[in-house]
Amino acid sequence: MARKFILQGITKSNHLDEIRDVLTVQNPSRILIGPKIYLCKSIDEARIIIGSANLTRGGLYSNIEASMKIVADLKLSEEAALVDDIERKLDGMIARFPDHVAEITTPDQVKSLLDAGLLIDERIKPAPSPSTSSTNRDHDSIPQMNLETKQAMPDPFIPTPQDAESITAINTHSSSSPATSVIDQSGLVWVSKPLQRRALNIPSAATTNPTGSMGFTKGRLHPIDQRHYFRDVVFKDLNWEYDTTPGRGHLERAEAEFLVVIKNVNYGVYAMSLTHDSRTDSRAYRQHNITTHLHWGNVKPLVSREDLLGRTMFLYLTTLRSGRFVLEID
Image 1 (tube, one colour):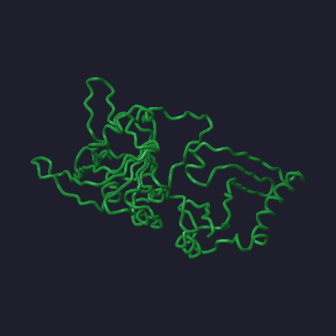
Image 2 (cartoon, rainbow, N blue to C red):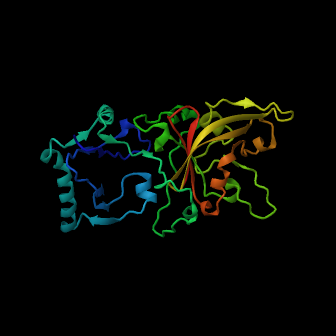
Image 3 (cartoon, helix red, strand yellow):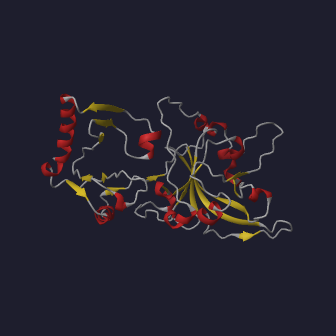
């Protein structure tokens, strides 16, 4: 049986119909293909990156990888020959290994490979879990490495409310069960700015009274109306009910399950409640302020930690079942 292999396409939205110039490689032996070559070429210059990084968000922006960048002047014969040699070897792979290398030209080819279990969709990764069953989390307080060469991750492509249906088009090829939940990066719907004390409910002084909740702001999304995006797009399918308490009838309440992953540790699934202020005549609404809040509940001890300050929170949709989301801090 052939070993699984990875197919990577350079697209912004990851739609299959936009994949171009992609080769698949099947290797039945136990030898893994590790190095990657990225080659961009113009008339006068070629830029080559050779290294360990996958063409993923983690590989290019957050993992610790080793790569070499070469800028080749194509007007110089020796450097042009190097680029030609790389291109010749890549172009010759199909002829040299016809049983192992093939070009992907249609979305149906990708689907058939996924269905056969021969293709790994790297947008879907198992949520990391602790390597032991110990409940001692002392090492979780180790601060994030401050790597001078670490690049800033670009803003992700996030659908607007008009593109709401595309948010729910989440890959369903994962074989993971609900007990081993997955993070599907194609279901990313929100990215925070660097986390501050208010969001994490960390008191700034002894007299500070934490609210126990976090307001959903625009974060790092392209311009959205935060007053409607979370209630009407991200959490639209929840069972929302109006508060029956006198004076609070304008508040909508809902509950959802969140798989909580913090610093690559899977803490399991927690039920958390959400509140949305439905008023359109309030001062907050007129000023385009926050109208949807997440109440931390039993998750508060996990997030109220100073080592999480400055980190980023990600919110994903998941197909495991209705009403479940993935909340990751990394």
